[in-house]
Amino acid sequence: MNSKTKNPLYVVTNKGQDVEEAENFIDALVKKLGLAPVISILEGILQEMLQQVSSFALFMVVKAYIDQLVDALEKLIKKFDPVLAFSIYKR
Image (tube, rainbow, N blue to C red; front, side, top):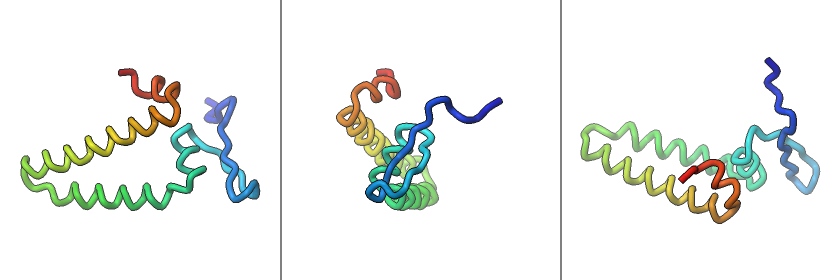
């Protein structure tokens, strides 16, 4: 099948000099705000935390931290675009 979408998202950066295709709204937001380095650092921190889990108690601490992070991201998305938040998080 055709893997291209009918209406792709594009992100214009660098004062109109660069145009990149985005896979979805979140990808477009990350590209538009230049958050790719922050995301990679966050991924590294989470990987390191998960490698340190050696007991159930440590797992619960890491899980609580990740839950807080996800809740904060959900609140941010709901503030940024309530319609998008409704389509992503059906709560």
